[in-house]
Amino acid sequence: MFIGHYGPAAAVAGKQIKLWHGFVAVQVLDILWAPFVLADIEQIRIVENFTQSNHFDLYHMPYTHSLPAALIWSTLGGLAFIAMKPSAGRRGGIIIGLLIFSHWLLDFIMHKPDLLLWYGGPKVGLGLWDNRPVTMIMEIGFLLAGMLIYLRATTANGKWGRIAPAMLVLTLVGAQITANFGPPPPSVNDAAQTALIAFGVAALIAFWCDQTRQSRQ
Ligand SMILES: [Zn+2]
Image (cartoon, rainbow, N blue to C red):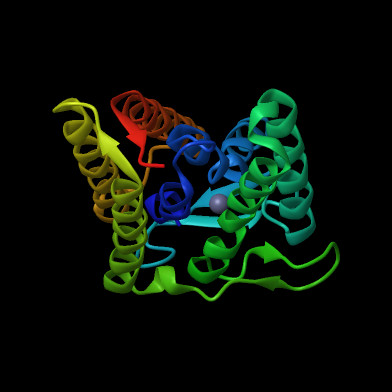
């Protein structure tokens, strides 16, 4: 999954958990995955139309996308958040941990069986990526549902408070359509770098939203 990951982040954003915190959290596994691929610690290969929705055979991702790894990164991420933002408290740490883990659950729905259940165990994935219309509905639907909850939980400080979330949604939907309908990337490294840039841009626009809107509570 790609932009659909941001739905849960937007749904819980408000006072303690900023939108940009959630936007980083839900992509932690992929933010780690990209440098792991660049360093050849994890491996993918580009196979044109490997699924209806993308061109990636994600055949070796034990350190970021296995179930045990996802649980460990979620725990560490939650603890790191408490350490960096003590005011968010234990509750904030748990929410961030759950957001990090939500990535694995949504990947499980979309991916072909490439997610290790345990080391030496089977690989799982329901494979919805093989249906492009359903993929688009899931990705955009999750994002929009989360953003609607965010818009209701917060209020705009002037016109930029309305423009920023609209820009965020338009940018993400544009990125999703490019990813699902575009040609295969020229190389694996190119794909990993593009992913990192996309996560960075999304987090930056989310940060902008945080500056232009405030919690209703
Ligand atoms: Zn992932």
